[in-house]
Amino acid sequence: MAGIYIHIPFCKTRCKYCDFFSTTHLEKRSQYVEALLEEIKAYPHPLPKGKGDEQSDMRDEGISTIYIGGGTPSTLDVEQLRRLGEEAMRLLGDKAKDEKREFTLEANPGDITMEKATAWRAIGINRLSIGIQSFDDDLLRLIGRRHTAEQARKSVSIAQAAGFDNISIDLMYALPSQTMKQWQRDITEALQL
Image (cartoon, rainbow, N blue to C red; front, side, top):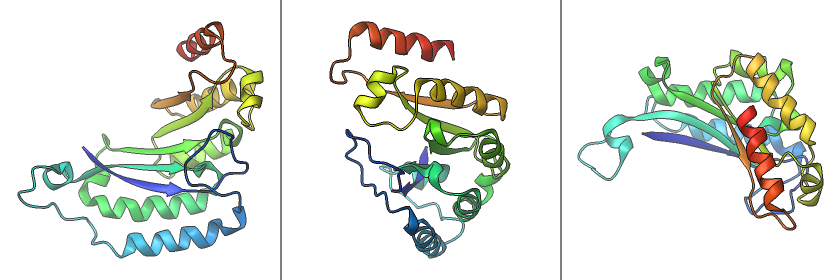
C-alpha cells in the first residue's frame, strides 16, 4: 500500500528531543499551505498507475492513504486542513471514494477539542495519531511537551466521542530518568484507553 505524506513543520513550541524539521513561526502557516496546494495541483489528478516497476506499490495499487504529519499539523485551522485534504483526495481519484482508505492527522493532545475533532471528521479525516509520549507529568515537562497527562487522557476520549475509531498514540521509552515502573504505567494507561 502506497501513501501520500504531507509534512506540516509548524509547532507552538519545540520539544527538546525532536529532530524533525519544524519551526515555531506560526505566522507562516498560510503561506506554507498555499505553496503546498500549488505543488499538489502540479501533479496529475488522479495520479496514474505506473507500469512494470515491481519495486513500487504505487505502480501496482495506486495511492490509498494520506498522512498529514509534522511538526504539529493540528496547529493548522480546519479550513487549511480541508483544502489540503480535498487536493490530496483528487490525487487518489476513485480511491478517494473507498471507505477503506485511511486519512490520518497527527495531533497534539493540547490541540484536540470536541469542536476541532468533529470538524476533522467532517472533512474526511478518519484516523488520529496523537503524540502523547507519556502519561507522567514530570516526564512530559522534562522533554518539553506542552500538554499534561490529563489532557492526554482527555484527548483520546474526545477523539472517540467525535467518532474516531482508528486512533494511534505515540509513547516514548527510555527517556532520561524514566523508570521501568513509569514505562509500565504508560503501557497500562494506553491499554485502558
